[in-house]
Image 1: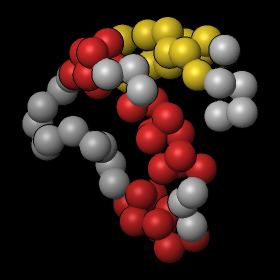
Image 2: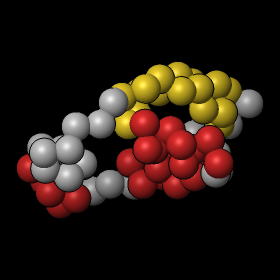
Image 3: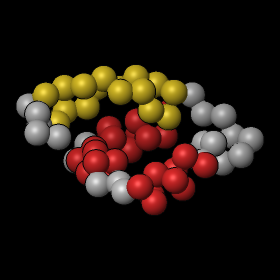
Length: 67
């Protein structure tokens, strides 16, 4: 297994703490993006609600090296 340090919003860190297996879905979603999906993602300024600043925290996630 491989460990990586990632910087995520505090709410995401809490979810990963309770459900660490969700990291594989996030990696898969990023890996399987196509050109059309990236066009929409590029337009997003933030993934958080407007006006809501959330602290970014560093967390260590465990995943297979294949990911």
